[in-house]
Image 1 (cartoon, rainbow, N blue to C red):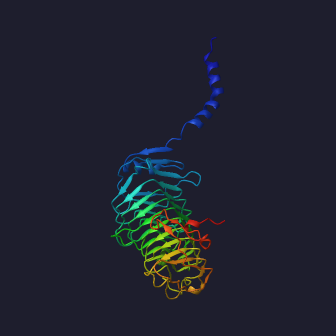
Image 2 (cartoon, rainbow, N blue to C red):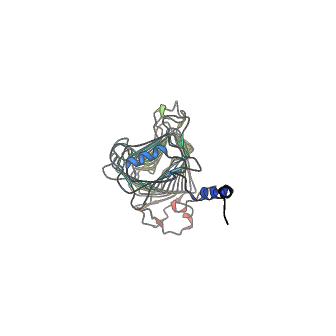
Length: 397
């Protein structure tokens, strides 16, 4: 049967909606999944990346000094920058900083390695626009090592970030803080490792300061992670508080389910209010179990107060002579100590605390195994230890 040109055209037009639907379902959006192989290609793709794009980095050395400014995904369609092979991660090495995100939103950085930076490893900030924080930044499966080695040089520096996540990262060897937060809010740092190294100054492991609030630090492993493994608060120049100057450095920070080995003080409350430390396991602190300090003037800031130290398992020895180091202009009497388990491994001492402890547990050997590794196990089945320590950690509703 002969089909005229007109009849053929009409048939094509009638089928067009079906063809268009098929193409929409099957064809990938242009640029949605991109492979890059060097720093130039990476910079080129970052300039035009759209929400939902995935930029995959082939193995290799991408150098340092990658600046990323005003790059925006969305909550439902983040922009993902990821190593193409998690077993052979792309390396960012040397220079002052590996990567600096400025005023970016909903970006996920995953499966890369950073090494040997003299300034910060990775930096992410709000671009100085304090009223419009960067939102939705995620750092996952990132290794950062050998940053500094001394002075205020951080592994991961975060300033003015809200609703952020740091997950399954490993930071070893740094100058200032492994993770330094200034004016960050509503974030989570979870299942990371913080490992101190000889030759690095390592002032603090994780630091939350400059008006930081509502941050959960959970299920991490700290080994010799600085003078203060977790510094809840700090000392920030007044002009850097975000979004505006507060009368505290940190508020509503929760440190839970973590495993600490060593450090001068595993935990320090510093010009902070209403912060909670619970169900952690603390092994062999070098000088103090915790500190309560005021590092801002009390005429502008509230005294450090209303901290809670609860259901923590603490194993200590003769190196701990003062359990809680208390600085001037603080309110240690407002702190709550509840149901912590204390075991002196080379004697029979009980802790001296600034407030009476409720339901404390003393000198029950937890029979720890692999105590200086992330795979810590508690061998004791004593009922008095139930619900105490990192292994017992559960999220609360």
